[in-house]
Image (tube, rainbow, N blue to C red; front, side):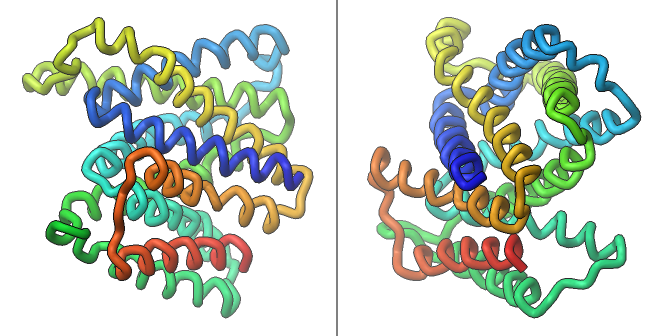
Length: 286
């Protein structure tokens, strides 16, 4: 279980970093649609090979809802990563775990002191993470808004996809359904953006997207694999341990940004990012 949960962190972290890099040269919505389409093709083959379509039931509607929300969350997240810095954006998005907590509250559950502390610490981290960057002004307000919207969307997807399947084959079908809806929703958004004259291709045109297909495939498959490994880890339990380990993925993104992009953060931003992570861990383990 521990290995699966840590694999989830690694896969999500690398997918986030790769998606953020791609959106610096390819429009974010194009990255979302193409990467999810490639993942849907692979998942479709898995569903056919395993006969997972036989697991279809009313729970698939949760996967449909997750698939409708997911592209919007990814779009906002990739736009935030493109505006950067990744070392601030990624830990802030990890506060998405607050959404499942909110759902539990509506269902009658009451958080303990640890969870309340996590909410307060995460909020403080969000405020501090918006401080000034080295050699520049404050992180753009638009970046913070994109990040928080993405966090809410990802949290909603987590809450929905957790209800979409109870078996391994059902999980395959739920993930495929989710990605298929991702592509349909994202494709509709692409058409709408194109009619408004928004650029859908990078400066290099289709050739540039073609050259990026290996990276796009990796981003899409890493995201799918992370969902699968987390679901398996949570099923093996205990869920609190799996959630804590899986929620470490922003550390992978931040370390990748530090190592590859040489991002520099001021002390207040580093503290804010750390508090956001600490709050997330408290929420997940409370």
